[in-house]
Image (cartoon, rainbow, N blue to C red; front, side, top):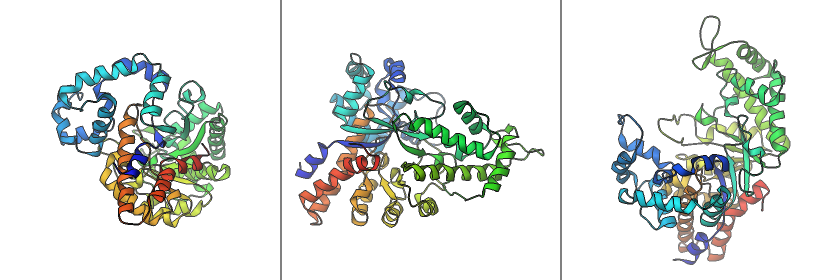
Length: 428
């Protein structure tokens, strides 16, 4: 093992993105955790491997056994194998599924939820800090409780419904959460800010998160207050019909929804600017299957980066498969940081190439190398190893080419694996 590889493999990590269950949710499911729970995102590759007409019914052990050999070399599959070998010294293979389940249950049965997270996330995956996405939402209050996650977790506030206004549901959600009545556009904006205030007051909010790429493209217009007010009035006073706004003639008023959604997006980003709150943006590939990639590339956000120069944008997932574009954007725009969270698992080879490119073009204090983006703490182990192996290979190549020496390579590792995240989010 090279000196730089050993250095990277033993390095603590800043995890920029995860979806971990709260302690209570984990405890409710712990007895059902089995070999299948190690799959993480690999479940989507199993579906892809089945083709366009998969059998009906759940993805049980027999189908996993049949399909696993086809996906074990993908990024998703390799992460599962890396984690399984590290944790249980077992290959992830059908003949070991029962033994893996037994080993996993043995590892968690005597531990509290806090102990489980400490063992897998902190000790085995070496994640020093985690930005959690999933429980700082208007429909969840678990993040308000200080005994639901490790003390090393901070949270991203997320409300994607605001940016895909197909009906009045986001308005009604804010009414319930803030205990107010919303009858005007300005009251709608005030309620959004009041919700952010409430989360911010916990002292645990790290960022505003926007995942609207799962619902719509990232092209954002700039409607006037008057245009948004007209849209609000149409949406607030009409019923919904199959996900759209029902007009008097029964047609769907998509233009109204877009105008209001884009207006609220600008208010969301302006709030980040006013209070110096980082903004996390999902770009690029979408989890699961059958998602539309149209409009998800980070370059669609260039007008936003240009307009809101005082906002610090954490742009997710390397914008894969448009990684080179994100590198160019991070070089051009001082307010953009390029984030490789989840990317190592989607496509390790492409992410290595992206990191090698970015280090040639982008100041290394503007690169975030890791985020597991998982739901269960043991999945972090394989994903963290996968990311570290990729980072180590890239730095080995830079050293071999004579571009950097060992000391500089270690400095780069310190920054992209941990220190850049600590500085960006004010932790450490």
